[in-house]
Image (cartoon, rainbow, N blue to C red):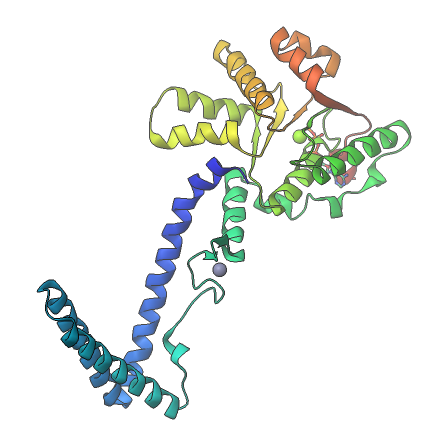
Length: 318
Ligand SMILES: Nc1ncnc2c1ncn2[C@@H]1O[C@H](COP(=O)(O)OP(=O)(O)OP(=O)(O)O)[C@@H](O)[C@H]1O
Ligand SMILES: [Mg+2]
Ligand SMILES: [Zn+2]
């Protein structure tokens, strides 16, 4: 998982863990209140313990003799034990008040300095939201990929693209690969992009999915403001584990756009960060749309797959 990306979401997630703790603390207190009205002796014990704690703190500040502090600590310990003993007597355990969402890491996100499963899950959710993909991915994934819409030459080509997509996923992070899907409308280019996105997200990696117009709009916004948030957004484009640019060619062409696209493609190549591009523009017509510097990188470093056949959108309607 890319470290920069983790950091961006990490602070957000830590805040979430804090909110969880506050929420559970409230639950704790409610439970206590209930218990204490029935058994006031718990209330007394707890008050005494916190009183002693306060006294110890005062003594520490005054640099009082250690003997007295030790004595108070022991006294407090006995009271806590008594508290737990009484709790057990009425059939409750010590953990009765310890409400946690995650019992494994106690809502800290870590066990032995390693990411807990709940933290990994939170990160994946963040990456999904960032890609605005979560709902689509329930439908557009490898399990739902149907070959029945293809036949003859179109079937031969889609099988090639499908196979390469699977191997792209299998060797993600091991073999550096970029993909370009091109062809007419409604042939499953976006569908296949989503299949891949799904798998990569499930690996706990960050995926940014953007249509070309969205991506360039995002870059324009970044250019014309200098909020910290925008710097983070720019980082996401350059540093996410996988960038998917859908519908390249459908954007409105401007000069800054050309250099933006060049920077993205070039920087990600240099840093060995994969990109998947889908476009309606035929591969051999791409030079009419983009500068030589962009084209030579795409031709040189992208595996290109053609999609042909009949519009699946129309077929599905019939
Ligand atoms: N292999 C497939 N199995 C099932 N449904 C598919 C498959 N491929 C595409 N579809 C469906 O067909 C429709 C068109 O597919 P998709 O959006 O991927 O086409 P596209 O090639 O990206 O088209 P465009 O160039 O217009 O963006 C979608 O509703 C999609 O869910
Ligand atoms: Mg599409
Ligand atoms: Zn956990």
